[in-house]
Length: 118
Length: 109
Image (tube, rainbow over all chains, first blue to last red; front, side, top):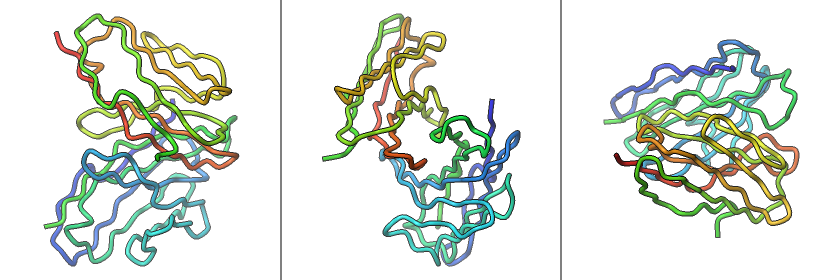
């Protein structure tokens, strides 16, 4: 089956620094990748949708200058949390959609990255 | 009111029991997903369905489009089934998902 990986799986950083999270599709080409955030005991919230080679589309309320998304290749998207603050501490999950998927709704989730900002 | 509602929010069962988790939605959808999230956080896609019924091992997912309702059944439950089960829907032709709040399942020996 389709596999999506994320790196790192967890990261601790100091307030004010930037952190980059990678999302890779390992055995398929992902034309679209989604970035989600999940706070403790809450459900996932979509942050942005990125299509390969174009700018990401951000959901309302998500600061595009703070959460930089790059989808430079068909197998890699990155999320950079700039000038991180403790309130950015969360679980970040990506999912990927194959360009050859038979169904538009097929997407595969990564294992997530737990970010703690101290 | 959330567009996607799940019930129950929490569920405790003994090993071997038959489990049902329900998902109701208030919008028109094109597909519904059942996801499993283990305590470590990683998410596994269990089912993607747009009609009828799907079965995979001990898991069965059904959907009734007219009633805007889906159920996830687990037969012969096992402690390793303990996880949060999340229902999510696609609306229209959009790939983005709207998520329910999840059902926390604990299966005990």
